[in-house]
Length: 314
Image 1 (cartoon, rainbow, N blue to C red):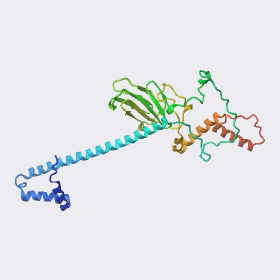
Image 2 (image 1 turned 135 degrees about the vertical axis):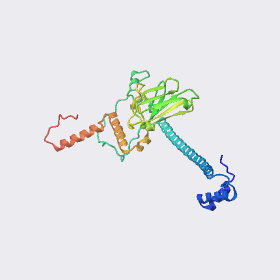
Image 3 (image 1 turned 90 degrees about the vertical axis):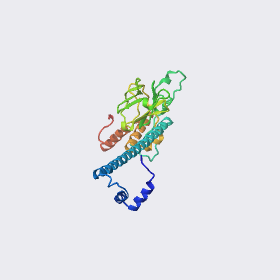
Image 4 (image 1 turned 120 degrees about the horizontal axis):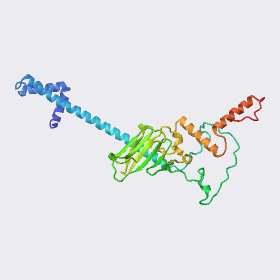
């Protein structure tokens, strides 16, 4: 063990000598003048003794450097994991609190397709049905409740999603520890369970995920939470594992606040999807159909001699 009793004295000596070599010279000079260090043993034994002490202290110094580095890496990793967990929890919380669709874009917002001035068709007649009326079972009935968290529930887990990620919550026995968890996240498959027991989830994912940005945590000792970063971040998932019950993605409710967070290309894609969806709901042409109509209109204007009465858009 290190003897720190003389640290103060040696520190004063090091400051006075102003260098390691002068300090060592002072120490050995003291041993030469005031002890029998150099006269009581052979030159080989003296050198061996000094070398042994130097090697021992050098090994201790190396060990201390290694321990410090390990501690720094451990703290850095913990900070990164805490941040990722916090971000994932915040995303899951927002996904669970979704209450409305994307808001209508302001007039000055960029839209990928021009909005034409067209006469809207009469709105579809509203049908009011009584309880147990077969009309209530229509999958396209907009009056049906939205999906909670844009996800679903199976026998083994509950899941929610945003455009960027999917969150899976798997209940496990109270008091479960992280060492008991067996989880494997791959780009196209997911396996989750407890060691020594049959897997709870084992199958092919609905879509590919970014493995490096996906992870799992054990929360409150009673549920395993899987955070899956989607590879394609402009589409909604119908399920987590292929073969499990699927949801109706038409009822998904995107977050109002997320539209401005998307990059330019992604935002334009989402805006186009929203525009086309609104047009279809009103019985109007989609952006692609409008573009074709515009091209035909320009061609007709450039060739008035031609008869376009029977022309059809393909």
